[in-house]
Length: 191
Image (cartoon, rainbow, N blue to C red; front, side, top):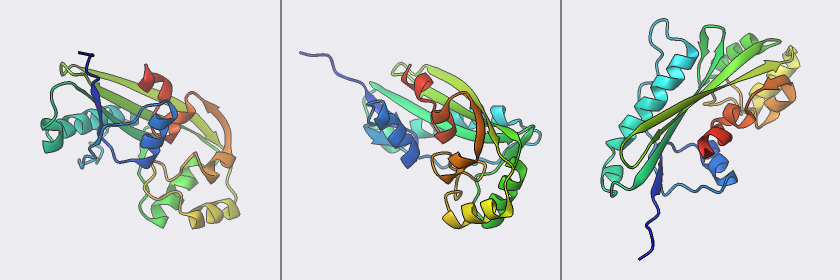
């Protein structure tokens, strides 16, 4: 008998994370999106929030009936991405006003994108790694902001932008992992 291959559970329904995994030849066996409270705690820093939320998503997914029905031979992958300007955590923009405020804060400044990746192994050990990427945007003109807001790419995105779209044209400098800014650092995830 051949060795059984472990299954991969992705604690996310994010099309971006699924596409990123596919780029490195990984296809999840089960998608298990979680619904947790992502509200930052008082005085919580952006990096700490990413770490806490990734772990909370992994723990929530472990209690999902579909995951509980699997044999113990699976890996569970969870991740969370947070955009921070200094100590300030930018929201996942849901309204035009939130997106416009994020762009105002990011205009002509550097910010940091943190993605924390949490992997639960078949023996239930938890491995977690947090990646930081620094991004600097050009100063936005009113026309830049208006054009970006009309596109709608900002909807539901941390910091009110999607780097893999029009926002890429705004980047003056990036230090670190591009895929981290998209939502999953591929090098660290693969390893």
